[in-house]
Image (tube, rainbow, N blue to C red; front, side, top):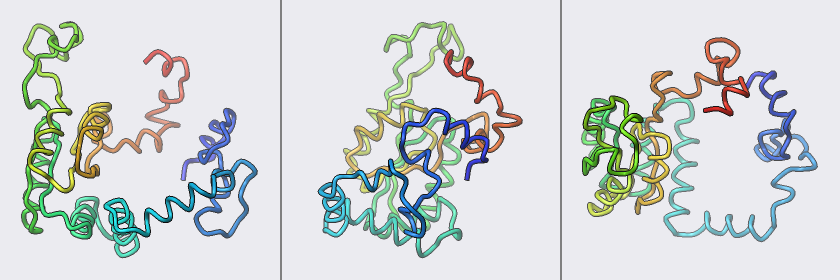
Length: 229
């Protein structure tokens, strides 16, 4: 749960959605829905349609039930790595694709070893595959991390296409940049889940910025600074 001061900050700019709700009655049905509740306002046809999807035999239904099974069986017991193994097994995946960042290739090698020990086949595609210099996609040289040097742009679309060609049945994101992960997910034929969300400042634990927003990360509440990012 977010600290109350953050809840109050959010409440000042209400958009009448779930982030402002203090009841969360949709989970246990042990409180009361607020007037603006999305569950109350949702079209009954939409609710029934999604229920029908989850009760069917499609990959969407399989994924929904597998996710709930892993959550209920292992709640608070497994690491994300182990949860992915359990999830992949429940959806019947045999070949797992890994879309990895160059900066997390060592972590990817360890993850790959774990997947092999669990009996899965893997195929990894690095973010720099295709090796196109950033200037070739319209990025000025001065915007490179190291101007004046060859610096390959990330290529998430090619990553997805390579994994599609290998007919992977589940793809795992390992540290792709913000936005690059969006493109990878958009072009991936297989369902996508995330093992590591890149955040170099917090050691790839983005929630730290929220938990320390009154101390080490208080700059994230500076509206003027945020508007100029």
